[in-house]
Amino acid sequence: MTDFAATKALFHLPDGMIYLDGNSLGPLPKTTAARVARAVTDEWGEKVITGWNRAGWMAQPTEMGDRIGRLIGAEAGHVVLGDTLSIKVYQALAAAIDLVPDRKVILTDSGNFPSDIYMAEGLIRSLGRGHELRVVDPQKVADHIDDDLAVLMLTQVDYRTGRLHDMAALTAKAHEAGAVTVWDLAHTAGAMAVDLAGCAADFAVGCTYKYLNAGPGAPAFIYVAPRHIETCQPALSGWLGHEAPFAFDLDYRPGTGIERMRVGTPPVLQMAALDAALDIWDSVDMDALRAASVALTEQFIAGIEAACPMLTLASPRDPAARGSQVSFRFADGYAAMQACIAQNLIGDFRAPDIMRFGFTPLFIDAGDVDRAIAIVSDVMTNRLWDDPQFKTRARVT
Image (tube, rainbow, N blue to C red; front, side, top):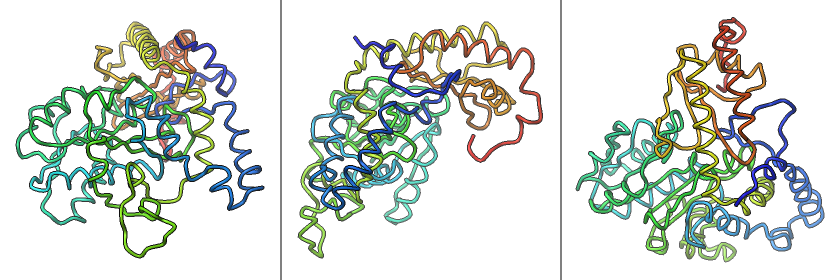
């Protein structure tokens, strides 16, 4: 059983701050600065280019991929890190499309993160092979899985509402129809247990700067199921995905296993930050994490609904149907969130009217939730949000 009081002590949180935005950017583990400094001074500084071998930089994407793989139920050797989440979405979708060459429909839902949809649209334009992207209501995804479907591309947890797709059921239905699946775990990895292998998922992608606490700009990951790994074709045939990159051949041959999904140079300094964060995650029991998350979100929903009738729950009421965040609707949600932030309660806003709060048991406890409820109640009951200073929108909301 994970001791969450102990994990809370491993994070730097500014004095007095209640941080309910780890679903957007995780806070700083206390060991990260020293770990990154060591990568800068002892590894880059002293080893210079020999660090690729002597400090193990080149192996980090797959070694850390396996550490993340434990959190998402992946088979060993089937997760690799690097590049950005948008790049990994593009790679996964392109590879998935090629596995079903006689079909043209890509299905997603209107709750998907827009970047995933943008990448799909761009890939379709680039291919010019007549593919169609269908965007449907999240509740009706299953109804649109039919024999025309090539790829089902979904984000498991809706970034706005926290609504949770049933990965096992939808993957099974897609497979019955002869389609393959691409799952985005951006709001799942580190938030709850995932069982990619048990669900027979085909591809999955995710980021490490949210619940995994690797810092802004941290690398993304991609998972490919064992049954596809030696046949899927990497659309982005980067140097480090080559079978023998240091042979410097002029023709591309995909590498073996998950190595073929590498593209560019590993972000060594970001990997150092991720390494420090994973030291915490290595000891976390995901079932215990999920139980603690449900308890915190249930406590928050009950407290807010009792104190703030002007807010409308946007997240599913059933905890089994939502991830590790809670969202409320309010017409002036941006201003209300800014007023909360002014009182050191950090959440965020998603257009058009979503006040979004993330719950990470690694550093959030029941006392924090009680204090958060009191602040939101004060902001809403006393209309503190109705102040011009809170209504001018910043570039990042």
